[in-house]
Length: 528
Image (cartoon, rainbow, N blue to C red):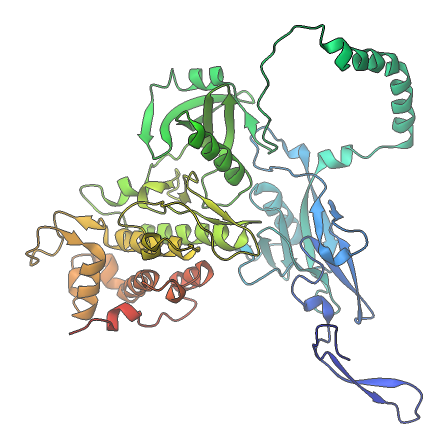
């Protein structure tokens, strides 16, 4: 059998008695293992392990009732991390003999040696996680979206899948009694509706002289809208300045949410046409992203000419202040964790969002640390979206000198690899605790008045002096192979040719040590 695309799928042979045909060979024995066969949030089940049946996971509806393989969409988009939500707003749907394998990087976390109920509680208590699978004694907490939900005998036997669902959707289902009551109410209110229709009729409206200014169209996101007065009070009249970025000034403040005082960072954007577009882009981009290593947007203000963004407050400030501080360096373990966290944030932006995102300005000032020193990528004001069928985008000249990939200067379409290049510079800064350009070189034998970090690291690697440079740091000496590997990863990211740089997925694997890191081309080039 050959498909309409010319793919050879099955080979049949005639039965010995001549009555019918037997399958002699087939390319796919279990169709449900084909990646994304039922689309995003689709659920694949097999009939007699031969014929697939595509349906939707609980809480989701098909995009196309005539073609179930096109996937499903959520009945309600719910922010489970909303500070205004309560445990009663959420329920956990249990689905027996089901797995959510998704893809190679689908897991947020694994929790070992627990039972099914604890796995359920782990999911319920983690607002950033919406699905989990319990198998054996391990709980696999999954990233979204779910793309390969399936029930396959016997592979998924004894597995239990959990899915987080908003209870508000359940409350929206209409019983017959409620429907009758609704009809009755409509009949009573019909005269009122008629009066409203007459009031807004063009013939009548011309005699009314109210000149109310048009309101801004609300942004349809599950975010809290604050008034300018609320944010003015929260920041004590915008006096508590934290810093200033390319798109505006950031202030610290305290907001009262659900009778609880919450510390926040409020970014006030400059007025003007370009900034207004930037504001709308930033709200839409950040409002649709949820990841442990991204700064979370709590709400916004879009009142008159005031445009502000309200973020969770990062207690430990920017990575730049942390790694470049005077005195004792941060521990090697903490620096390694920070670097890996940033890489995982990039993996989410590049490969796990509904629309891929190029940040365009990865640098230590745009990575913040929370109270637990978890790294979170911030400032999406320069972000660019890539649709699923695109690999490159044309954008204006962006970024910060020293972290910008060479292709920015060539006026050519850029890809996600510009972020990988910037990360390479940042990675070397983190592991060496050295700025990308320093007027006081760490190598005392260097007679130059300034040091370019990338050039200096390349020189140390080529001359085999890398170990001598860090000989004063006992932590790194004891873990030198890991330090050397991270140095090589940084140099791979800095390849002038974008295609030679690793993807974000490969970058995470290289930093985790799950794949080998070869010798970067830069080390062998221009050697004398």
